[in-house]
Image (cartoon, rainbow over the protein chains, first blue to last red):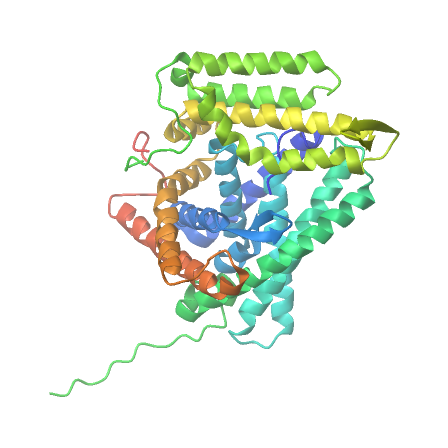
Length: 228
Length: 229
């Protein structure tokens, strides 16, 4: 769900653009600290993965379909800063090269999905993980719950922006109820898929999952005497 | 970028619009859509002017409209949202006769729907025109000239370079799933789909590591050489 041009008025669009630019700037620095000179190829490939994941549409009901947003998924798999950077790059490429989401709404889209979606998802993930027993099996459950809250959270922030700079005379309460209600449904799908994908990665390469750091038991390389 | 991956939206040509410097086109597009968004929606004739200007550029670029129009479907969900406005908005209502039915629509909602539809449509058409007349590599170079952080341009260029590789990887996986009787869209088969996406993540991540090592062995030091992109 990409906000197009003209949904929010010009001052709100410019303001979210400034927020998005600041957020992406910080994410760039923090991701470079995490990945050093691997940043460009790694973040590029993870962004391509998120884009591919978003191509799969699920029927949501009433003839419409939704797709994975991937904010919480990216945050759990590669960490919140790299994740925010990847989602932002996906939105930039979609807006600039595919006309998906308006150019003036790019800041809004990055703020909603790249910043709010990723960081609320990650915060939810961390909170749930702190409560659950410290074992690898808790990670997918926490990731799913993080994804579940991240989608309605992004919808709520969108409604707030709409209340400030919306171009339609709709009561904010109605929009909030409709948006949050609808996005809770989408969030459930997002949660199930996110949890399953994280558990699939943990089954094969738990060392790659950023959110599982500290839970993976390092096995030391054992070499035996070679007997002839 | 190394391999010649065709861009899905690019329409090959040699017109003035195609040859114009990319950074100028990006700035013009941004200024144009910002102006559209800032224009009060009651100024009806102005939007006709915007459309004429845009169609003039498309004509100048010799990109057929039949090429651009089908690609505007990305906008459809928002037209639906706009169409809902007259029904849910507040304010005085007007009765609109429609084939024997009387629809009670909100006046301000009708205005909002008009505003959303016209601004969204002009924005999509303008963005499509940029995408159709500018090679992705040129857009990247243009962004670089506009002082977008170098690292961000690099990440974008890697994403675009490997987009087709990763999506066709997924395409093959989905074909394999379907040939085994799995419907990737059905929630019943989400576990299988999730394992596929998990494998795709591991493959993409490992490809990134291999690409990085290949770059290191060619002397990469965190920056890309000027014209190699």
